[in-house]
Length: 91
Image 1 (cartoon, rainbow, N blue to C red):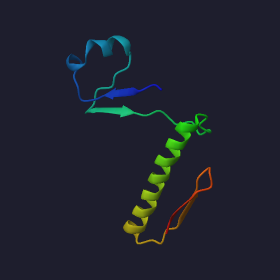
Image 2: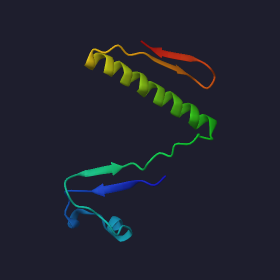
Image 3: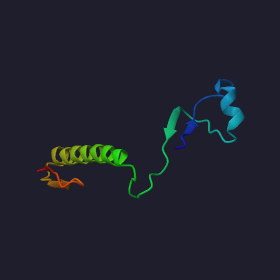
Image 4: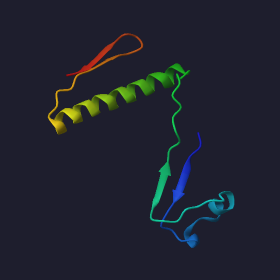
């Protein structure tokens, strides 16, 4: 993929010449941050990448459910079935 960098808070004197040669638009404000592109919402064709993404997103979703229950004193239930039919739950 393409990584987009936004340089902020630096004067042009501190920007390496390689960056200024290849980029026509540089914003100067406050600090350095990396900007992610949008993720296309379509099925991941590579089986290994799909499984890794499922595992990471499943864990993130379970963490968010836990955080919501603790922070808001809410009763939260979450049921996830993997593509192979394995059950993951939070209650």
